[in-house]
Amino acid sequence: MSALADWLVRQAPAWLDGPRPLAPAARRALQAIQRCRTPALGGHVYRCTDCDETDYAYHSCHQRSCPRCAGAGTVRACAASFRRFRRFTPRFSSR
Image 1 (cartoon, one colour):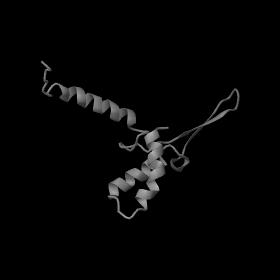
Image 2 (cartoon, one colour):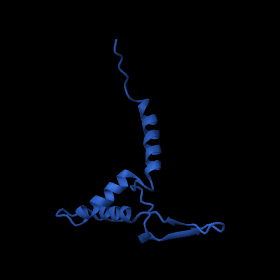
Image 3 (cartoon, helix red, strand yellow):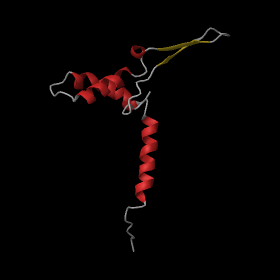
Image 4 (cartoon, rainbow, N blue to C red):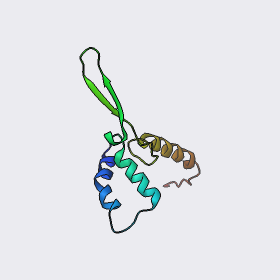
């Protein structure tokens, strides 16, 4: 699990029930992140036929701001944007 996702889940009740209201989109995103990859969203049970070991795979929220679901995609997109815009950044020499 992502450390950022864990932190968001711990802080979510304070933001959702806090004195300052969240925008509806922010509220939906935070609630989705809170339930991501937990039994609340359901999932699949996988059982090994050899040893009868059981593994649970919970569904994800598919929220683009979720660190669990879109974390790697966000990193790739930021890196691509950085490479694309870096060539337009003026370079200063230290001479």
